[in-house]
Image 1 (cartoon, protein in one colour):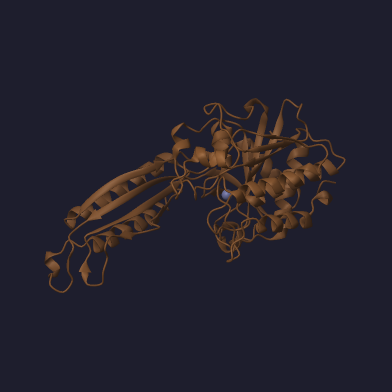
Image 2 (cartoon, protein in one colour):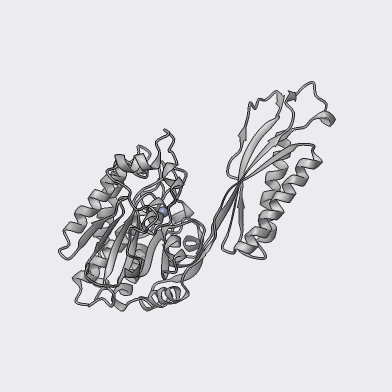
Length: 414
Ligand SMILES: [Zn+2]
């Protein structure tokens, strides 16, 4: 039986060991894209893989790793995630997906069951945008989705991506071509912590992801007049902060209003005031807006509504509003058959499960974009915490999700 080969202890030991790599004094992990710490994490997982006799390992020119039990097989089920983190992130984001995929593969190897499709473990580089402001660099490179401009993005110290890759020991080549043989990928599975509260609050162990929300992001700059707070009558002010307060509230209200009609979240996560002071009317500030949905057309409507509302508020208050769209990504519907398969498998092992959309972006969305059947499992984030040292998931849920993956390897995927 596959179930008896899944080892919680082995998974916890590996998670603990990886936690040590880049561990911060606040109990989190800083393992940035193409850092020494990311390299060390890859090296550790490679050591663990090398203990499994049947695994053949390949590394591509940007450092992604693919390890398979059947290198000669023309088709393989790919499973994995990433090993990098944000600044002072949690120990589970990405890492758990790698550890659980490895566990599923090892469990199948140790069992007497013959897999329908042999598995390949995938370790993607550089999923988090913390260092370069660009997400999913590794998976995009593996799938031929990186552009030449992407290689010139710089980190906080002005180090371009291509140089960071070189410093980490890689020589990117054939940039416009996938580094992976796409025809070999029968399907892709990724496990991740939910990063939201749905599974935790409904006491559900396994989430089957239906779609991945994608953001449209704006930066709004609000310009008024700097004036003396004591000497300027209320009627003569052009107060950028008061205007922004109304705008930010409008962004929230639009999200709440349209939440009834479809999938939408609207967020202002920051505000940057120039030369703010207690004794001045504020003349200049900026704030970002992040709008996400798994329905592009619906999101487009909300986006228009937000921009026009903010323009109207600026006009009413005689403020100048500069609007800049920072990026626009398409949401992704994951493969329906794969979803059904994962739901049935969760049912068959007797765990609690439900379908839900993903709020965050994941490597899996790039694989699905190429029409490769892709499935994602979520496990609960206790209190919805993520990108934070307090990330936590029950061992029960981790075991159940790894078991679903092991069963998927044995039974084959649609
Ligand atoms: Zn992640």
